[in-house]
Image (cartoon, rainbow, N blue to C red; front, side, top):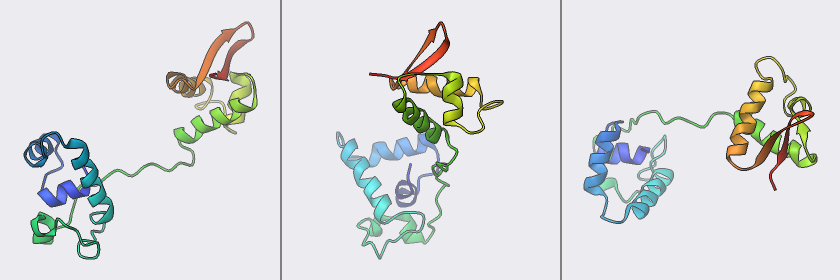
Length: 153
């Protein structure tokens, strides 16, 4: 749910309530168009600080929040910081493997993370590789020299 849904229709932050309102207001067979329109409205006029008049929001005359002046909305989680994130380390694995044909876990780990070891050791790296293998980006194999990873071809 975005700010526009919550404010415009006075929908509580509850999936069941949102579903009931969506069933009522969404034109039949137009869910994609409706969703795109609401997302655009949210992005242009109804962000954390609403810009109803400045953005010329076309929904103002029907909007519950505009009518009441209550623009509070449930907290919307923000994307976590990239620095030090799992996304960042996944990217590093791909970049490092792009430089080599294949690497053992002992060779790959320190190239991906300076503090490789302990809590961010082999189990942590295997978890990253498992995710990337599930996304069909890398392959992991047991060889006579131990576990190795490589980019998928």
